[in-house]
Length: 156
Image 1 (cartoon, rainbow, N blue to C red):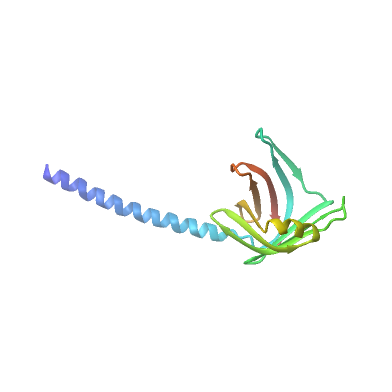
Image 2 (image 1 turned 180 degrees about the horizontal axis):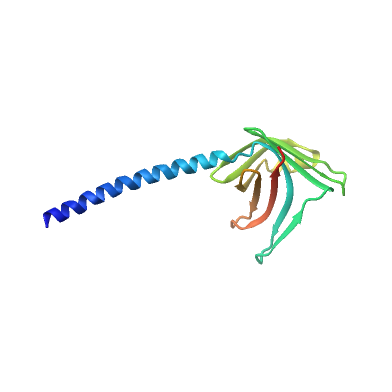
Protein backbone atom coordinates (compact mmCIF):
# COMPACT_ATOMS: atom_id res chain seq x y z
CA UNK A 1 0.00 0.00 0.00
CA UNK A 2 2.83 2.38 0.91
CA UNK A 3 4.61 1.53 -2.34
CA UNK A 4 1.48 2.30 -4.36
CA UNK A 5 1.06 5.64 -2.61
CA UNK A 6 4.74 6.45 -3.20
CA UNK A 7 4.44 5.61 -6.93
CA UNK A 8 1.35 7.83 -7.28
CA UNK A 9 3.11 10.75 -5.56
CA UNK A 10 6.19 10.39 -7.79
CA UNK A 11 3.98 10.22 -10.89
CA UNK A 12 2.19 13.41 -9.84
CA UNK A 13 5.47 15.22 -9.26
CA UNK A 14 6.79 14.29 -12.70
CA UNK A 15 3.51 15.19 -14.41
CA UNK A 16 3.59 18.64 -12.76
CA UNK A 17 7.15 19.20 -13.96
CA UNK A 18 6.22 18.20 -17.53
CA UNK A 19 3.21 20.59 -17.54
CA UNK A 20 5.38 23.49 -16.46
CA UNK A 21 7.70 22.79 -19.40
CA UNK A 22 4.73 22.79 -21.80
CA UNK A 23 3.45 26.07 -20.33
CA UNK A 24 6.87 27.69 -20.83
CA UNK A 25 7.06 26.49 -24.42
CA UNK A 26 3.51 27.71 -25.14
CA UNK A 27 4.24 31.17 -23.66
CA UNK A 28 7.42 31.45 -25.70
CA UNK A 29 5.58 30.39 -28.84
CA UNK A 30 2.90 33.01 -28.23
CA UNK A 31 5.46 35.76 -27.63
CA UNK A 32 7.29 34.79 -30.82
CA UNK A 33 4.02 34.69 -32.81
CA UNK A 34 3.10 38.21 -31.69
CA UNK A 35 6.51 39.46 -32.83
CA UNK A 36 6.08 37.99 -36.32
CA UNK A 37 3.22 40.29 -37.38
CA UNK A 38 4.02 43.97 -37.26
CA UNK A 39 2.26 47.11 -38.45
CA UNK A 40 5.52 48.55 -39.78
CA UNK A 41 5.08 49.41 -43.45
CA UNK A 42 2.48 50.92 -45.76
CA UNK A 43 -1.14 49.78 -45.78
CA UNK A 44 -4.09 50.46 -48.10
CA UNK A 45 -7.70 50.57 -46.90
CA UNK A 46 -9.74 47.97 -48.81
CA UNK A 47 -13.08 48.04 -46.99
CA UNK A 48 -15.13 49.19 -44.03
CA UNK A 49 -17.48 47.10 -41.95
CA UNK A 50 -20.45 48.85 -40.33
CA UNK A 51 -21.97 46.84 -37.47
CA UNK A 52 -25.68 47.34 -36.85
CA UNK A 53 -27.31 47.17 -33.43
CA UNK A 54 -29.31 44.18 -34.68
CA UNK A 55 -26.11 42.22 -35.40
CA UNK A 56 -26.07 42.96 -39.12
CA UNK A 57 -22.80 43.82 -40.85
CA UNK A 58 -22.54 45.97 -43.98
CA UNK A 59 -19.34 45.80 -46.01
CA UNK A 60 -18.39 48.95 -47.89
CA UNK A 61 -15.50 48.40 -50.31
CA UNK A 62 -12.97 51.16 -50.85
CA UNK A 63 -12.89 52.70 -54.30
CA UNK A 64 -10.77 54.92 -56.52
CA UNK A 65 -12.79 57.90 -55.27
CA UNK A 66 -12.20 57.05 -51.60
CA UNK A 67 -8.54 56.18 -50.90
CA UNK A 68 -6.81 55.85 -47.56
CA UNK A 69 -3.20 54.89 -46.81
CA UNK A 70 -1.63 54.32 -43.39
CA UNK A 71 2.11 54.20 -42.80
CA UNK A 72 3.70 52.87 -39.63
CA UNK A 73 7.33 53.19 -38.55
CA UNK A 74 8.44 51.47 -35.34
CA UNK A 75 6.75 54.20 -33.22
CA UNK A 76 5.01 56.67 -35.55
CA UNK A 77 1.83 56.58 -37.62
CA UNK A 78 0.71 58.81 -40.46
CA UNK A 79 -2.40 58.38 -42.53
CA UNK A 80 -4.04 60.26 -45.37
CA UNK A 81 -7.42 60.01 -47.02
CA UNK A 82 -8.69 61.48 -50.23
CA UNK A 83 -12.31 61.60 -51.26
CA UNK A 84 -12.99 62.97 -54.70
CA UNK A 85 -16.61 63.64 -53.69
CA UNK A 86 -15.50 66.60 -51.53
CA UNK A 87 -12.57 68.98 -51.30
CA UNK A 88 -11.70 68.32 -47.65
CA UNK A 89 -8.28 66.77 -47.09
CA UNK A 90 -7.86 64.33 -44.24
CA UNK A 91 -4.54 63.32 -42.68
CA UNK A 92 -2.99 62.88 -39.26
CA UNK A 93 0.36 62.15 -37.63
CA UNK A 94 1.38 60.88 -34.21
CA UNK A 95 2.60 58.01 -32.07
CA UNK A 96 1.15 54.53 -31.77
CA UNK A 97 1.55 51.39 -29.75
CA UNK A 98 0.12 47.89 -29.75
CA UNK A 99 -0.44 46.07 -26.48
CA UNK A 100 -2.62 43.05 -25.72
CA UNK A 101 -4.38 43.22 -29.08
CA UNK A 102 -5.21 46.94 -28.75
CA UNK A 103 -3.90 49.50 -31.25
CA UNK A 104 -3.66 52.97 -29.72
CA UNK A 105 -2.89 56.01 -31.86
CA UNK A 106 -2.01 59.26 -30.09
CA UNK A 107 -2.27 62.00 -32.70
CA UNK A 108 -0.19 65.19 -32.59
CA UNK A 109 -1.64 67.06 -35.55
CA UNK A 110 -3.49 66.65 -38.80
CA UNK A 111 -5.39 68.37 -41.54
CA UNK A 112 -7.65 71.30 -40.71
CA UNK A 113 -10.65 68.97 -40.36
CA UNK A 114 -8.73 66.45 -38.27
CA UNK A 115 -7.25 69.14 -36.01
CA UNK A 116 -10.81 70.04 -34.97
CA UNK A 117 -11.26 66.46 -33.78
CA UNK A 118 -7.80 66.34 -32.15
CA UNK A 119 -8.69 69.42 -30.04
CA UNK A 120 -11.17 67.26 -28.13
CA UNK A 121 -9.60 63.82 -28.44
CA UNK A 122 -5.99 62.85 -29.22
CA UNK A 123 -6.07 59.15 -28.32
CA UNK A 124 -7.87 56.58 -30.46
CA UNK A 125 -7.98 52.89 -29.49
CA UNK A 126 -9.05 49.93 -31.58
CA UNK A 127 -9.13 46.16 -31.30
CA UNK A 128 -6.43 44.91 -33.66
CA UNK A 129 -6.63 41.78 -35.78
CA UNK A 130 -3.41 41.30 -37.75
CA UNK A 131 -1.82 38.73 -40.01
CA UNK A 132 1.24 39.02 -42.20
CA UNK A 133 -0.37 41.10 -44.97
CA UNK A 134 -3.75 42.21 -43.59
CA UNK A 135 -5.05 44.00 -40.55
CA UNK A 136 -8.36 45.27 -39.21
CA UNK A 137 -8.86 47.97 -36.63
CA UNK A 138 -12.21 47.65 -34.90
CA UNK A 139 -13.85 50.53 -33.02
CA UNK A 140 -15.99 49.49 -30.05
CA UNK A 141 -18.81 51.33 -28.29
CA UNK A 142 -18.82 51.90 -24.50
CA UNK A 143 -20.41 48.46 -23.96
CA UNK A 144 -17.68 46.73 -25.99
CA UNK A 145 -19.77 46.09 -29.11
CA UNK A 146 -18.17 46.67 -32.53
CA UNK A 147 -19.29 49.80 -34.37
CA UNK A 148 -16.94 50.10 -37.33
CA UNK A 149 -13.95 48.21 -38.72
CA UNK A 150 -11.39 49.38 -41.24
CA UNK A 151 -9.70 46.59 -43.21
CA UNK A 152 -6.24 47.08 -44.73
CA UNK A 153 -3.82 45.17 -46.92
CA UNK A 154 -0.05 45.61 -46.87
CA UNK A 155 1.29 47.44 -49.93
CA UNK A 156 4.91 47.61 -48.75
